[in-house]
Each structure stands twice: as structure tokens, then as C-alpha cells.
Length: 295
Ligand code: NAD
Image: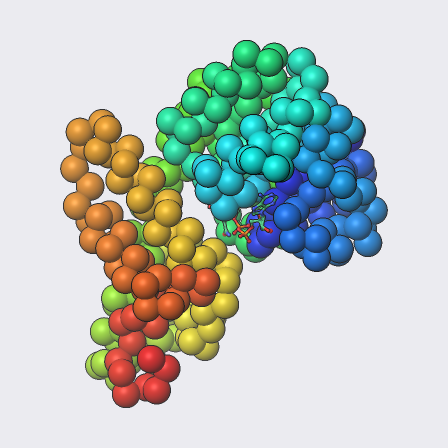
């Protein structure tokens, strides 16, 4: 199959590589030309611009930082035409980015006027899952709508959830990240407390990992946390964004979300302290005892 891929950053690059390795043809575009170099080496073709990419393929995957960028890439921005300029009726855009269900529904309605289907398809499983091709993909569409492009999506994720309506994929993704990111904030607090009590981080990870405090995040990040290695990964700024979107959703639905609000405030503080481009576990930099010389 021949697909397009826009946004080949921390997540997009390994996902696109897996699409190529599965034997599909791929046309790629990123605003940073260096972001597609490795993919071109693997056989990807680089589009000159977004309309050219859309003209070349009938399905495009997006992995972009936020909804403002998704909208600019799809609809275009002043002086920078978007995918719609080159799209045909019947084309499909799978948005793998984490954005709000409201923005997805709004953009899907705009594209429907032109006969283009936008499907929210956010992913979970972190950069390591993207490399392994084992992501969970949460699709705001029916299985029948997804079926024609399933071979491409299967190269990215082992668990494809077809959730029916547009926006439902993003709702599930934000619920997942609400749990994962508040959990990570609590784990960071526990590690910082252990530091102060003189308990090695490895001991915390060993014991919690076999006890009721264990989690996916702990297993994925324990070695990095023990080594004080906070290279991204998944940026502090993205954690702040995702929790903010989950809080917006809670606000719209009239649900309480106080634990998440406090975690969101902490990620925000880390971002303002200059840690925004660290991995989200870099929240620990904010909480570590000052005497260890890393502040
Ligand atoms: P990233 O910043 O590494 O990648 C985003 C890419 O988009 C970059 O290469 C950037 O150059 C490109 N880009 C930005 N503006 C563009 C434009 N106008 N046109 C074309 N390309 C543009 O971020 P990431 O970590 O890869 O995350 C991407 C999305 O996936 C986000 O929505 C994030 O919330 C979500 N996500 C990330 C993870 C993770 O672990 N990193 C996990 C699940 C979901």
C-alpha cells in the first residue's frame, strides 16, 4: 500500500520506519527536513510540500505536537497550503496525535464537506512501543471504515481499538493519559521522598514493581529514573498539554478531576523551570533534593 506520513519526530519516525519495514510505500513530510533523512535512507520518498504529499497518496497519517499544528497541516496556514489543497474525495487522514475530541470533530466536519474522512487514531505505548510496533491505537471509527488501511495500521500497533464515533479515540487516549501521567507524578514524588530518606531508587523500583504500587510507567522508566536520565521520550510539555486536555474534557462533562489538576500544575511548573523538553519523568528534576547538584 502507499501512504503518507506527516510529523516524523520522536513517535512519528519509528512508526513510519515500521510502515516501511512492513513493505509499504511511504511519502513523508516534516517541517524539519532533517527529521526525514533516516526514513529516506529506509526507502521513503520526501514530498516537497503538504499538497504534493496529499496528491500522491489516498491515506495520510499525522503525528504532530498539538491541535493547532494539526489544523495548520490539514487546512493550511497563511503562505503554507495544507493537505486539503491536494486531497481527493474519498481520501482518509488518520490523526495519530493526541488532541481534544472537540478539535477532531470540528476538523472532521470541515473535511467532510470536501469528501475527506478524518479519523482520530491516537496511540499509546511510548517511543519504545513505537519502535517495537506494539502501540495501542484508539480509532474514532468503525472497523469497516478502518479495514482498507488496516495493514498499514498493523505495522504500527498490535492493538487496534475501533471505537465507532469520531472523537471517541481521543476521549479514550485522554483518559489513559490522565491515569498514566497523574500516576507518574505520584511516582516522581515517591522517588524524591526516597532520595531524601536515603533509599536507592533501584530499591523503590524493585519493591513497587512486585507490589501494588507497580505500573507500566515504572517498568518502562525505572532504569532511566535510577540513572537520573531524563532525555525524552515524551516531553514534559506534552504531559502538560495532555493533562490540560483531559481537564478541559472533565470541565465540559462536569466531572471532578482534582488529582489530575494538581499533577497538571506540577508539570506546568517543571516546564516553566526550563524542563519542558525533558522526558515527562523529568518532573523529578523539580522534586529532587537540592543537595544532589542537579537543580
Ligand atoms: P515531536 O515533537 O517529537 O514530533 C512532532 C513532529 O512534528 C516533529 O518532528 C516536528 O518537526 C513536526 N512538525 C511540527 N510542526 C509541523 C508542521 N507544521 N508540519 C510538519 N511537521 C511538523 O513529538 P512526539 O513525541 O513525536 O509526539 C507527537 C504526537 O504524539 C503528540 O501529539 C504527542 O502527544 C503524541 N504521543 C507522544 C508519545 C511519546 O511517547 N512521545 C506517546 C503517545 C502519543
